[in-house]
Amino acid sequence: MAVSSASAARTGAVPKPKLSLGQIFTMSFGFLGIQFGFALQNGNTSRILRSFGADVDQLPMFWIVAPLVGMIVQPLIGHYSDRTWNRLGRRKPYFLAGAVLSTLALVFLPNSGATASVIPALWIGAGMVMIMDASFNVAMEPFRALVADNLPDSQSTVGFSIQTFLIGLGAVVGSALPDILGKNGFSMTAGTDGVADNIKYAFYIGAVVFIGAILVTVFFSKEYPPAEYESFHGKPAEEDKTKAGLSEILKDFAKMPKTMRQLGLVQFFTWFALFSMWVFTTDAVATHVYGLSINDSKSIAYNEAGNKVGTAFGVYNFVAMFYALCLPFMAKLIGRKATHAFSLIAGGLGLISIYFIKDPEMLKYSMVGIGLAWASILAMPYVILSGAIPAGKLGIYMGIFNFFITLPQIINGLFGGAIVKHIYGGQPIYAVVLAGFFMICAAICCLFVYDAGDARKKIKA
Image (spheres, one colour):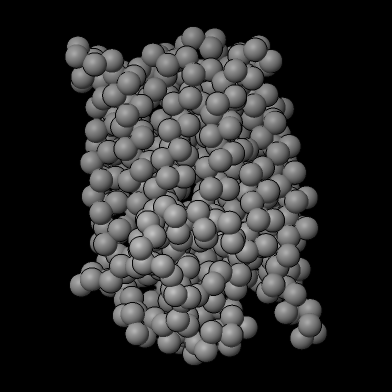
């Protein structure tokens, strides 16, 4: 989210130089590793926790740890990365530290069962999910700020589209990896510690990919030193240096731009839906499509359903990877809001269509619409927000914007399991259908967001 030309004029900043596609690619390459890790987490955490003894209606409460941690970590990381400069740079120290911690968490999560004789594996697994998500957030938040730091407004859509392409590439492989390993000799039967070998080794590979991709960005991308940074972004407003970081975060939250507040409602419906999809799709497919009992979580058939869901998630990420490259052209043709709204509607219809599937092979067709939505979710809200963020506040506002991602997940985590158990009669497929309708609600809300970029285009026209 680069500062707009209008904002630059107000602050006296000079335009940032354009970057080559290679520079943009290298700068964003760490996202491939981050999303590889997220794909393994999203596709396998529920079944790992189920293998450790969690009931399906308890899953949201274990997943709720992730957005809670993100709500705390991302604003803090954004706030302090705005004020950091050392030999590694401004943002790099944070996502390098996050990468090391994430790598360790990816290795330890599938081995949580080894502690069962001392501490219940379920609680160790839940703790590893918390540590993993905190580490992912430490690594991820500064990346979006890094792109905003370095890209001029004219390249913001291209930059976030390339970022989304790399996210999709990492997610495709990460989602499909357990199934690939299972078809190539790795056991899909849960061992004495509750986790099958194909899941364990997928996480080990993910740990290597995660740290490797981050290191590419660390070693081969640049950050502007403070004086040069100010020449591009303008000098930030003077702050009371005696105030604590939390006080400044609350002050910035109260002053968030109008566009951010409007996008908040879009994000609420969107991420409520995504949380339901990630938490409940494996059990929804196992019960509604495969016809299994809700208590068959340790059977080979349940693992096959989980592998099928993981592969299907790879399909939506594959679609997102290439659709992301189309977003700049669609945005020019119909506008950024309309592009995002169209994509969200496609995602909503894709989620609803899972209810009508009886053949597991058909699941990949539902994922096409979800892939369109996912590509847009990862790019367009941030592009729309470009130009609305004050100079020197890129990191903190990226973190604050994360509130609108974590809050709906927390609400879903608190009430989603009870709704499935008491209202849906233990049938998680209805949580997936509701997610589809929420995605469509997000699309409608998007049409009412003020987009300064689109407004400037209309004035020029």
